[in-house]
Each structure stands twice: as C-alpha cells, then as structure tokens.
Length: 534
Ligand code: ADP
Image (tube, rainbow, N blue to C red; front, side):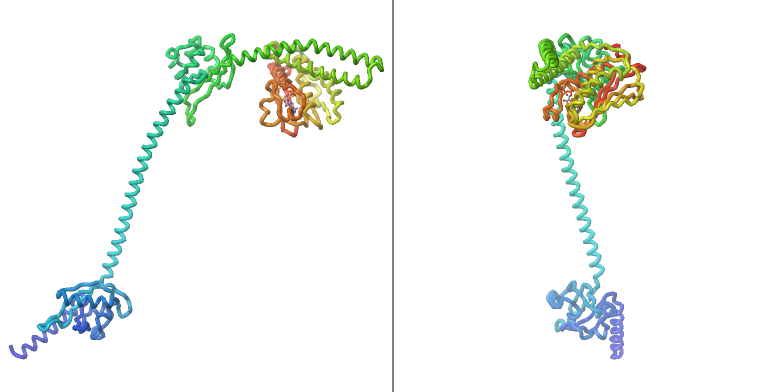
C-alpha cells in the first residue's frame, strides 16, 4: 500500500470515528490515565452542558458529586479489567444534579492502560419510575396489610358473635328454666293465655285453686273454658263481650262462701307485639276473713259504746240545763269544764257514728231514704248550723255562693247529703288557720248539681292525694299538726255520693288550699234513677 493510500485510509478512519462519536446514541467521553477528558460527543455535551472544547482537560471527578467514589470506579476498571458500572450524581454546568449510570472500559496498548472510555446514561426517569413503582408497591402492600387485618378483625368479630350467640342462647335457656321454675313454684295462681286466647300455661297453684286437671284445660280457647264449671266464674270475670281479656287490676272475685281471689290481668307485649295475657290470681280469703272479723268487732264495740255515751250526754245536758235555770248552782269554772266534757262526748258520739256507718257500708246495710227536694232546701239546715259554728272562728270567713237562683230538684237522702257537707265543712274548719271558706252550689251542662267547699287551708301533699278516700287515711301534714280526726269522713262521703249516682273529688295544693266537690244528678237526668238502687 502506498503512503498516500495509507494516509487516505487513516483519514477515512478518523472521519468515520468522528461520525460514529457524534451519532453514538449515548453520552460518551475518552479520558487519559490521569482521568482528564480527551474528547467527548454531542450527547455528552447535552448531558453535562460542557462543550466538546470546554470539556477537554477537565478531570472526571469534577463532573460528579461523589468525588471519592470516582476513584473506586477507576480502581474497579483497572482491577477487573472489564466493564465497570456505577450510579453517580452528575452536576451540570447549571449546577443541576442528574443521576447517571456510568460505565467504563480501559483503553489498552501493549504498554498497558492508556486511559478509559466512559459512557454515561441519564437515569432520572428510571429512578423516578423505580420510586413510583416502589411507592405503588408500598401502597399495595399497605392495602394488602389493611385487608388482611380487616379480614382478621372480621374473623375475630365473627368468632365473638358466635361466642355471644352461644352465651345468649345458654343464658336464655337458663332464664327459661328459671322462669318455668318460678311459675311452677309461685305461691299465687298463674294462667297464661297466648295471643289467640288459648290457655297455654297453668301453674300448680292455679290448678289447686280451681281444682282442675291441667290436661283438661290447657290448649282450650278462652270462651270454650266457660264449659268448665270450676273455671267459669274466673272466665266470666275476665272476659269481655268480644271474647278478649279485660284489663283488671287487683279486683276481688268471690269464689265461694269464704273463698276470695284477687285477680289481675297483664298483657304481655314485646316491641308492641302481643304475646298473650297473664292472669294472676291471689288468694285473699284470709285477709277478707280478718277484715270481716275486724269490722264485726268495730260494729259491736261501736254499738256497745253508744249507750254509755248517750248516758253521759244526757247527764251532762242535765247539769248544763240546771246551771242555766238556777243561777249560782254551779260556778263558771264548773260550767266550762262540763261544756268541755260535753263537747268531747259529742266528738266521741260522732266517731262512734262514723264507725257504725263504715260497718254498715261494708256490710251493705247503709240504708238510704231518698226524697225529691230542691237541692238548696236539702242542705240549708247544715249551712245555717255552720254559719253559727263559723262565728266561733273569727279568723275564718264563711261565704255561701249560690250561683243560680232556681236550682233543679234532686232525689237524695237529705240526712246523708248533710253528712257529706258537714264533713267538707268540718275539714275546712279543722285544716284552715285563716282565710275564706266558700261553699258553692251550681249546675253543670250535664244536668248535674255541683256542690263544692273551697278553703285557704294546709292542703294535701301531692304524693298522698290518691289515698285520700281510703278508710282511716290521714295525710301526714295534718297528723303532724295534731288536729283530731279519724280518716273516716271522706270514705263515708264517697260511698254516699256514689250511691246517689254522683262523683266526689278534690283539687289541692299543699300550703295553698283545697277544693272538695261532689256532683249528683238532677231529677231531669236519667241517671237519677240510680237512687232506686239505694
Ligand atoms: P279526718 O277525720 O281525718 O278529717 P276525713 O276522711 O274527713 O278524716 O279526711 C281524711 C284526710 O283528708 C284528713 O285527715 C286530711 O289529711 C285530708 N283532708 C280532708 N279535707 C281536707 C282539707 N280541707 N284540707 C286539708 N286536708 C284535708
């Protein structure tokens, strides 16, 4: 080959190398043994910002943040004598850090290593992607962990529920056995009718009360049980016309000569659903017997007391008459003492009369003698008597308020109505320290006469008001005041008014006063016929 040809080939090779360098699709540079750049390509320029000319002579470590690692990198190339690779941070001419993957290969001649080929690849995108993938992976991992935890939680929740259900079942079973044992051994009789009114449970005590066999009655319908003579009185008592069970609270049912039951019915409901009705029967024969004996005793004692009290009354009256006829026979102190004894005796007579009236009411022997009379005429004598009595109490102002001039006739037992008004007025006097006592007579829209006595007295404690008409009941505020009384007046009054087909009631505020009132039908009203039942 001629020298000319050789030069041409060298020339061509150089050009070819230059072209290759510029078209190489990766950033590239050649460095000498001292790590100084000898040449670079276009992409190197693009990546680093250093022009091909400016980069010549630059130390490779000046391009990177991790200076010490460059040394290791070259050491690796030398040692391994093969392609070394490392990830480093390149700093561009604008100071921007770019993550790159740098690979290097030693340039060799027979004399040994003369320098290195270095290629650098921008791996920012790859890093971002890796980061994103890592984050995604992390997210998925977390979700998976969460789901696993949720599944674990649901599993243990399910196990807990199963455990609870099992426990509740056992408890319910225990409760059921307990309830059954209570019903079996209950000292009162119990009959349970299901929602369709079939007798489903009857406990041993009820069986004893009615002397029946369980098998013969259970499963039978309410109205069909009327054919069972032992149960008939009870069924008649609790059943209404629609063959439903009435609401009954502690009502007496007479089963025989001295056999009384107290009956209560309770609708059993769960969340508004009707489960049936429980009929509870309690034997009150013993209480009734004691009540009867007590009432007989009271009646006998009161009868026995009447005669001596009348004797005392007569004697004291004689003394007082003599003292007024024959001045000087008794001195003032003696007269006053006898008057006191006379009044005390009168109170005793009143009490004995009350007791007798109570026993008569209870035995159904309280006799009424009704007559048709103008209502004002009927009560006028009592009013007149009390006008006098009030004169002794200057601190009380007694007023009579007859709202209408002409009042309709009523059919009443005048004496008994008098007892009620006396009781109202006596109480107003006893339980009022000062103020007005107003007796009003009026009619209402329903052909009823309404008579009331209003006072400014001590009133009745709210929590005791519902017991006011009970026999012997006295509210604690008057007992505390030490005012005399027996707690019988209102009981008798209620019986009298109800026997007249009327109603009796009161309104009261403790410390402010009370109004007691009753109504009785006027003669025009059909209800007045009830008087025939006296
Ligand atoms: P008592 O003989 O005790 O007055 P009552 O049957 O007439 O018997 O009254 C029963 C109770 O009712 C009284 O003891 C009293 O507590 C209360 N009471 C009745 N009337 C009044 C009233 N006007 N003011 C306050 N309390 C009253």
